[in-house]
Amino acid sequence: MGYTIFLQQPTSNAHCLHGFHSCSDHLYLNYSSSCHLSFRLSSFPSKSCLRCDYVIGFQKNGFLLQCRQQHTSAYIDTDDVANENDCNLERAAIRPYQKLKETQIDSQRHSNSSLLCMDGPFVKNNEESNNKILCNFCKNGKLIEASNLLDVMARSSQIPDFSSCISITRGLIKIDQIEKASKVLWIMVMSGGVPDIITYNMLIGGLCKKGQLKSAIELLDNMGLSGCPPDMITYNTIIRCMSDHRQIDHAVEFWKDQLRNGCPPYVITYTMLIELFCKNHGATRAMEVLDDLVIEGCYPDIVTYNSLINTTCKLRNYKDAALVISDLLSRGLEPDAITYNTLLFYLCGSGNWVEVDEILSIMNRTSYPPTIISYNILIKSLCKYGHLDQAVDFLDQMISLGCSPDIVTYNTLFGALCREGMTDEALDILHALVDIGCSPVLITYNIITHGLVKKGDMEKAKGLFGEMIGCGIGPDEITYSTLITGFCRKDRVEEAIEMLREMGRSSHKTRVGTYTIVIQAMCRTKKVDAAIEILDMMILSRCKPDKSIYTALIRGVAAAGMIDEAAEIRKILSKQKVLREE
Image (cartoon, rainbow, N blue to C red; front, side, top):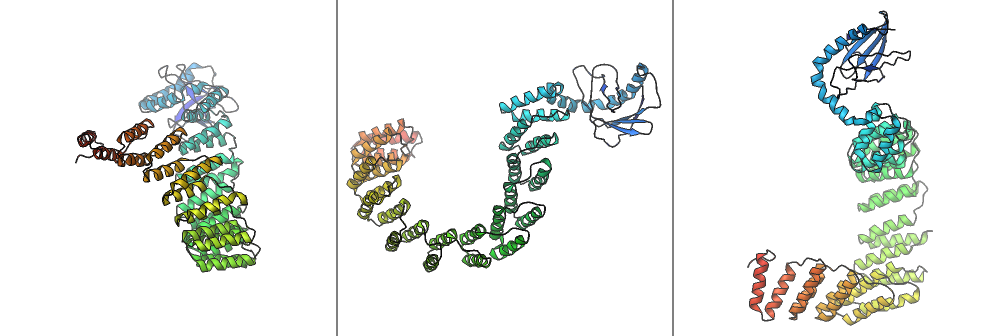
């Protein structure tokens, strides 16, 4: 069956995609009952290739064929029947199109050539070949090339490999190409793929990070339609983003809407929401929102209230904390160990000892007596405020109540004792730790070593160093630096150098400050040659000397009676802009 074609103005688009390319001097129409039309047209150079999308619409006596790209259409009249092999009809059909094309080709050629250059050879490949190329792009980390290939496959109605789509989407998100990642995921979904929850959450997180909250919510709304419903992390990400953009009231309404749409009442989600609301509007309004959420099926538990107590205490708003506790009790809940320890932590930190005593008294009357965590909070705060006697009293109390102190307890106590210069008492307790089954750790020895060095008792510090090695605990950079500083202060430079060399042998990095202390000690004791040796050691270890080291060397050289040499060294260093000219 043959057809006559007349050009008409563009009509509305229908969802049917076809294309044409150059291969002859004619326009060939192939018609079948399934309404598929294919074209071949050649009035362009042989190396160019123009893609065009067509739309087919039915009219009374024929079909309306529209080219989206060129904004033209052709009416195919089924009443004008002739021999389907009639070349005159074919030429008659192509002539008006070619004439119109000549007026448009100059403006379109560049964009069409760019599109086809981007497609490259992929447009001629079948689905299987393109998917193999896609997998190779993914394997080699060529994310942009892979996303471009996906565009070609989508235009050719080819189904991409879904695992590759997931890899491309995640990779693009990681390099902050959120728009490209969204497009890849959309192609996957429209091709029938179902992305996993991790990929969706990564993309929503990326959108929120970019501040594209509306797009994130739209993506969340579409997740269920694609077969992957949102989870707790999805909702948490969006709610936190709303809070960051000062939309916490909107976040509350958003969560209510989700609950009404069948979202599970995730405890962590509404706990986070109430906590953020409390930070923005205070505990009174937060309790009102909490009541509203109960109506929607979100019932607060002790975790929710502990979070609110932590928030209010962190803001030092103890009245609001009391309000939260009151609401907690009104719902028939009971404070637990976390509740009491949270209160102790903030009350002790601000030195509210009267309130601390009240909390301890309440704890002793409940099923949640003070634990080792409670006592560690107390002892640390008392030591911080200089109440060492009370800290020791609490240590004795916890032992008498059968609550054994741990190494954290003792390290806190050692720090306080050493600050007060009570290093002998600290050593006595240290030596008793083994008998009570509490082994000291590296930080324990460092705390006491620092106390001994500060006090100037280098013999005991050196002996403690040996004990530590004997217990199988290796010293670290802090241990060595502390001892080196102590030896230098006492002008025991030979021992300091030996410790420095041992530090180098054990592959510990030596700080510039440590070298500076040793070199200054050498120069102070007029051992300039040894100081230069240490400087060489420093440079070999790729540690750059600073101004204080060179200044110490110059003074040491001058103090050794070599005034002219010291002046010459200063002149050279000033010329090299290491030191300022005087």
